[in-house]
Amino acid sequence: MPRLKPLNRADVPECEEDFDYFESRMGFLPNSLLTMARKPNIVAAFTQLAKEVYDPDAGISISLRNLIANMASRSAGCQYCVAHTASNAHRSSVEDQKIAKAWEYETSPLFSDAERAVLRFAQCAAAVPNMADEEVFADLREHYSEEEIVEIMATVAYFGFLNRWNDTMATSLEDIPTNFAENTLNDGTWEAGKHKD
Image 1: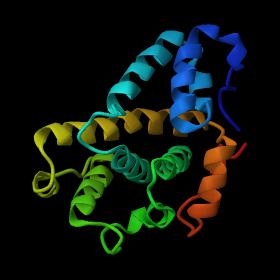
Image 2 (image 1 turned 90 degrees about the vertical axis):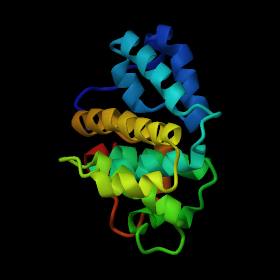
Image 3 (image 1 turned 90 degrees about the horizontal axis):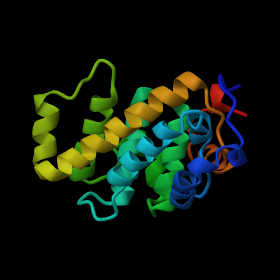
Image 4 (image 1 turned 135 degrees about the horizontal axis):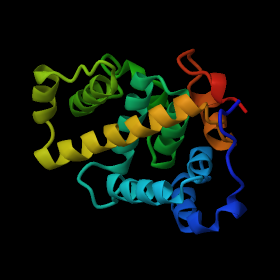
């Protein structure tokens, strides 16, 4: 059960443009935004950050950014965000088997060395305490430019905000990410838990 009930969309018309952005990118309007909408300026600022993190012209592909987000959320333990980022990865054409095996990136043949480096970085950077040490960075630098590393870290940090928000607020999961997670992340590493509506 959510700790704060999401507002009705119609009650916050000043957020409609922001809501439209997320709905078009994700296929649904996240309940987290409807909770956050009690402070419309926070929604507006968050939307601007989202547009920068998910810039379609960035060097890191949207599909890889969604896998990075998924790994960061898995590391942080936010089941709401794990479901969202898995669903987003699927929408950006990442194969379902690869999404399901993301936690096994170190040994799965589905992942390249460059993907292993970035997923290891995301896992370590999202951990508390932070485990992104010099060795993890050195491996990342083997595959990505400094500008790309900033894009990668921005994705991890963006989801750091969402992981804390949704895990603390016990945000209720929406149907699309719930259905995707239940059908794809069915190896025992995911459960809706407190986010089940």
